[in-house]
Amino acid sequence: MTRVGILLMNLGGPERIKDVGPFLYNLFSDPEIIRIPIPFFQKPLAWFISTLRSSRSQKAYQSIGGGSPLRRITEQQARELQSELRQRGINATSYVAMRYWHPFTESAVSDIKADGISQVVVLPLYPQFSISTSGSSFRELKRLREADVEFQKLPIRCIRSWFDNPGYISSMAELIKEQILLCQSPEKAHICFTAHGVPKSYVEEAGDPYKEEIQDCSILIIDQLEKILGHSNPYTLSYQSRVGPEEWLQPYTEDVFEELGKSLTKELVVVPISFVSEHIETLQEIDIEYRNIAKRFGITNFRRVRALDTYPMFIKGLADLVTSCLEGPEISLNEAAKLPDKIKLYPQEKWQWGWNNSAEVWNGRVAMFVFIVFLLELFIGNGPLHYIGLL
Image (cartoon, rainbow, N blue to C red; front, side, top):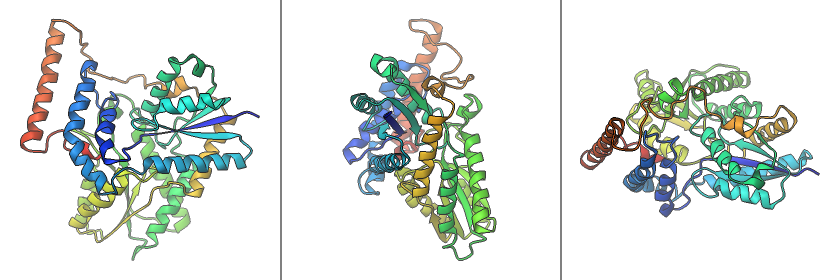
């Protein structure tokens, strides 16, 4: 009987306070998270940022119990998905591959090879595709495959995006309904979808489909919610967790809360649309920071829809994705890892090694950037790195 390996890909998170610094270093070493024109400076800059922000991030993780629950929850999802698939007659074994913390993708690949798996289905736990989340994870897996002759022999099918999966949409609508019905005026409660943001340039310059998929996903959920509630609610889509001075997708969540407060909205149901597991962005950023912001703007009933975690309908939806992937048209790893055609990893001006005009320009730019960032953080504590600590 064919043995199918299900590779669940996610971000990862520090499980202990002492893991925060190394986790941040791994995160910011990824050029898809912070893009600089000179690859040589990627790791030194990652060290610089992680060193600056470790203390603030550690406080954030301390406020939710001292570490991220993401690994524990993802492993629970893997077990539930494996059980569901086996009940359907698929001889499946699930594996977890985290991008920036244990268990790393390399470890999952080693386990897959050791277990004698016949073929692999790759399932990113990001419903909406972005070059900085699913894309980065797919490309990491592709790099490992290219360097491993044995791994190259293993057939791989990929699920690139699943924002419109019926099980996911229905699960989100059901969980939102739970919170809507707890409001004093269910028909008037305002729904705010909040998604993890990405730089605006990713969408406008690199062709990232993330914004469009988030928008389409929110509409699908609202349509489903109206069917099960029998009435419509006002809703807004916003973006959270921005990093640095660059413009990110808007509107920002805190700005939406301010506008809702001005319009005298009293009951707010916040929906973490791009997160399928509880972690720092839900437990600390939304539950603590955004809750306080909402209260400050006069929103008296703040309700947050819980993450999907191992919600049975959601797990069945994931199983449907795997089944369809095995039976339908194949999406190869190369196709899943492919960047949009118009992506610009770095500015168009080509940087070269050596003592030439281009090198002088970029040396000066990078040195000035690092110097300005350091001064802002040192003297006013609100420089471009101010927002990095939550990640």
